[in-house]
Length: 339
Image (cartoon, rainbow, N blue to C red):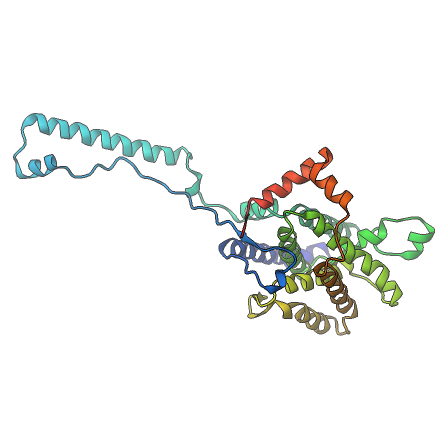
């Protein structure tokens, strides 16, 4: 069974890398548009990185003396001085190309796909990076030890939570965005794009983004059992919740769906509902209520009823224990300039 999974898994990984790098390149080459949906959150603009300029030295300009030489009007001393200048130019050219051979200028080196993927991972905002890493680790453990099923120890089981005091299960269940296959890798890329995009928007006040994630998780943990819905892939439902918030904050912006067609950002979460219905053959109630929870959050945030606690803000801004987190978000903030 493992051998039969190698080819489709390698193909899926290649496709995922291509989509990830394509999205990263597009995010660097274009500036995110702001719209009325950004009111209450502040607007931002990307700081375009300047392109490194290379100066090739050692080529002297034509002087009056060289013109005289061409006409035969220069004496021997002038010819000797010209020969010396030409030899110096040749030395400069040799030094220039020697520096390229020695690898002093890495801009002319070809960057491999693996290096680009690592670079994109390093530049991912902290919480998104930690979440995606944990998701992939859990899925990999399930692939190796549980027959490509999400690890039972991490899945949501309220009997074991309440009777066995396994309190981690409601939270680790959000690491479940499916089993490892081509759709799983596409889901990872999807979460990387939209969750990471939202975290970047809150780069100056990341505690508001943490509250956003916590609100969505608590709403689903409490809301789904209350509505008597069996939640299996809470990570997928959380991504629907985040995509809805992202779409409201980018209303009117054109987005490309699966590299096939363009649509408006506000239509994207409803496209996800239709996709889930077509692939699973059942009404996507869990995703629908993920959108509902996202709408509730967006409304509460917009009217100012949902804010990060003062204690959390002060801890992030002043506590020495939060210095490492602040430094990570400073790297994210370096990509932005206030409008």
